[in-house]
Length: 444
Ligand SMILES: Cc1ncc(COP(=O)(O)O)c(C=O)c1O
Image (cartoon, rainbow, N blue to C red; front, side, top):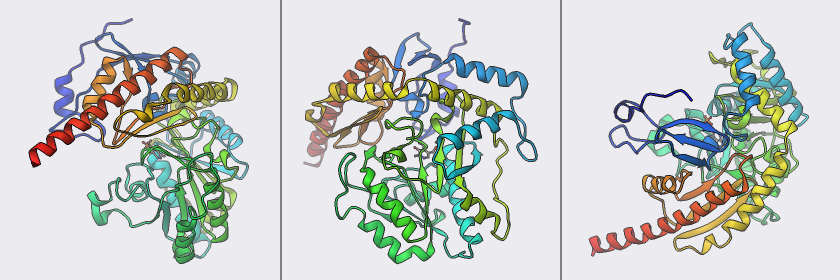
């Protein structure tokens, strides 16, 4: 292994933004120098078992030879070229794979550069479609609370109106329509009134609604909530009834995470527009895609401009497309279904009883996702250090301690993760108790 210069933590702290942090009150960072399989190696040599798959993307683990070879091979030929007026093997191969593996009606592929952009693209496509269908009044997007679709402006506009960034940016964020999030838990038949808020919103506003956007089955960053497949079925029926497009955001759920290749398959429905990202490249490099039906593409062609108005500089980046082709080949040939189902069983067994820990509100497992929901928000910096001390990389947020490990994780590595989750949940519960006690004293 080549020796590396020490990590310049001072520079990092003074000059580099990290996600969702302050530049003046920076949270601690941990220097990673390499990664292999399911382990991240810190600059002090410590190995951490990764429970996050690098924000849910690195499903095959780090340093997988087939993805590295595909990227190396692509680099030797062409790392990037503009996509305007030019095409290349990797974009074509990848798009063929995406069209083949998603539902039959999805035939057109827009290669975007991140998940948020894939969502922007889907929303723009929906608006332009209705222009082409002589209904330019259909401009609004309807969605459910507790959603998360990204951090760019249009994506933010459909994130949860309270937990998201609406209040922070006020009128600069487009006002969309929100209804209560699905309540019926995954695996249960739809509770009678669960879809009613959605129905009422469609009855009242359908003439102005271009599309409904939703994360199928699992609402991720908005609360790690798993809901009934029947809700999605009912939603598809409502969208057809009220002439509204359905955008499914599979950026977090796509490529096996919930136990099906795509989460919409739990409900056996089709989207009009589908967003994928994150695990698309196996988490090796940024790439996302928006797929749409012939009908949506035709509508856009019949809109006043006749073209779809979006074209990022790095659209269809060959290196990212090559990584995605290799990752999708692994999905097609390896035993991810078995891996995800084993992870699910083990999570259920080893996390059982965690909901009895003081301060824990709920415990949820679906596919390769395990969630301990605390009653109160956790102290991320404190818990992060506790996880590192236990030899694992788990990054809690809000009131959630969760894992989404790479599918190739071994049973013993997974046991270390579940053990750490329980230890740290206990710590978080005790911490909240102390905070409550001290705030009681200071108010007393
Ligand atoms: C469901 C969903 N949509 C969109 C995004 C945004 O993707 P990106 O971070 O690649 O912009 C995320 C990211 O977590 C997501 O979970």
